[in-house]
Structure formats: C-alpha cells, structure tokens
Image 1 (cartoon, rainbow, N blue to C red):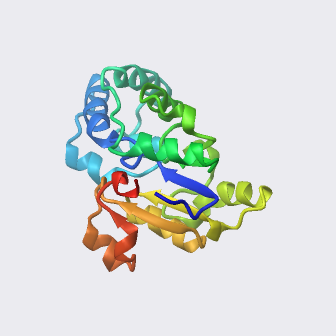
Image 2: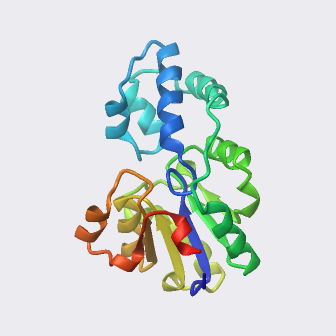
Length: 211
C-alpha cells in the first residue's frame, strides 16, 4: 500500500466499525425500556441522521437525557466490531505519519466509547461528531471544521482523502474537493456509487483492499 495523501479522513459508522448491527439491537432494547417499540426498517430509514435527530425521529417526546444515559449502558452489552482491514490500515497511516481524522453523525461520548472498546482510539488524531458542527451530512458544510483544520495545517482539501460507506460521505467529500474512496460495508452498493459518478478504482469491498 502506498499513500498519496497528507491526511486520511474516515467516516465512523460502518466504515471503521460495524456499528449498525450492534446499534440496531441496542436501540431496539433501550427504546423498548422507555416504552417505544421500533422496527429495524424504522431504524434503517433514519440511519445516518445526527444521533439526537435519530432518537427524536424514532421516539418523539422521549426524555433524551435520561434515554442517552440508559442507552450508553445498554451499548456495553453489544461489543463493537472493527471492520476488516481497519487496524492494519490505521497502523500503516500512523507509521507513515499521516494524520487520521474521524467524522461521525453519532454522539461524541458514544463514539469514543466504541473506539476505545475496539482499541482503535489510540490511532485517531482528531474526532468530529454531531455536537461539533451545526451542519450534517449530506450538507457539504458538515466538513467545515475539518477544512478549517486542514487550512490551519497548510493542507489543501485535494491533498486529503475521505473514506466512507455512504453516498452522503461521497457527496460532502466531492463538494469540498476532497478525494473519496468508498467501502461497501454499509447500506450503499457498488451500483449506487457508480451511478453517482465514482470510478471503479475508488470503490472497495472492504478496507483490506487498501493493503
């Protein structure tokens, strides 16, 4: 594997970690404890929203603070799974002094909890979650704080690469002139990315193909 970029930006959910499988079960259990009965289809249709919006969509009028505290405990019963090839790719980037940024629609404390339990928090240089920006995917301004950090470090957007599993990831990267690599570990398929204009060589089944 060779690296032609000065910074690597990763989406979190289903790119670095297989969160959807565990999160669907954890959300279903936690919401049930609060009297809300949701289906997997209902979660799927709202997946990718900022965490607070996800919860308000699934459970209107819920006591968010109480639910958040309960859900963080429920999550402990669903160990996070690191996606294939992630550790090796992160090790390579660290060894080559390539900063690793992570962006997520999730809540900061919950994302950190997963990163630490998956033993990959140690690789991450900087993390942005939904609390860190007023804009959210697919709004290109989602990456405004990251672009600002790149500029502060004298790095142009075109010298960075964004790696994600969704068309929203592709959209925000493209609109900010950041290179993009898709991994087919999420809800979107090869045909979705090709139809959106992404080249074959930029579509990977998993991060293992980068090695």
